[in-house]
Amino acid sequence: MTTCSVWFRRGLLSGAAATFALGARGTYAADGQVFDFSQETVGAEPSSFAAVVGNWVIANDGNNRVLAVDGRRWKEGQTAAGLADKARAIYGERYAEFLDNVQAYAYFPYAVAKGVEDFREGEISVRFKPLEGRVDQGAGILFNLKPNGDYLTVRANALENNLVLWQVVHGKRSSVKWIRNTPTASRQWHDLKLIVRGRTVEGHLNGRPWLTYELAAPVSGKVGLWSKADSFVYFDDYRVAHAA
Image (cartoon, rainbow, N blue to C red; front, side, top):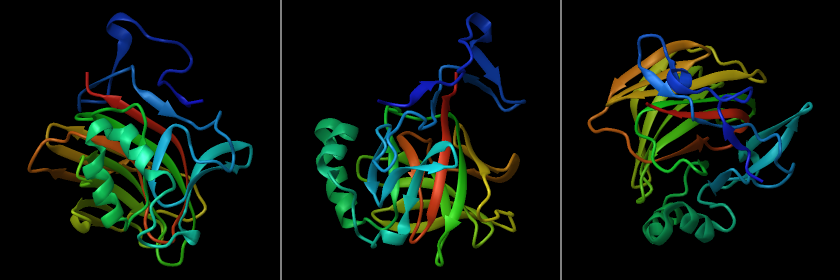
């Protein structure tokens, strides 16, 4: 059973109220999606995300079900089980190129949100709780995922206390913009948000806009979650709202 639901759980809005304003930044549709994992099976891969690289399973955080990425048991280059079927589900007949590139460059764990066909403008947010990781405790929002496996991600790191916009091209990761001194304590829940308006990308952490960058080209592609190395992180309340 998928846990995708309409963003406004307590009732649908209609007419002019079916959009919401994000300050002066722009207007976003209310028919977004939220992935809260409450109906998922603990110990299994999520049904609402396609785990592409790394170990992604449903876990309990107290009485709440969350999506966990467990890099402690992951080796670099290890793709997720059943990758060919997942690649076909994500890209249909175009899956072969994506599959080849993922298998060649499986350096960073990530999972793709199902049911989000093409995110171009709007807002993506997620709650995350970094738990363990001696090398990294990274949690990111993946976006602009292309059929060839290239993508962008904005990620926080509890060990480094920074917020970084990364690009991955043919498996090679490089930093686009790096913001230091962004407090991100381990074993606490944090809020990460991505806002895309045209070619402008914003990264928000715990309600504060830390990062702004103008891309060379507009965003268009799949979205999901991202992590790194031995990070053990919980995710919850993944939300996607397209620009109206």
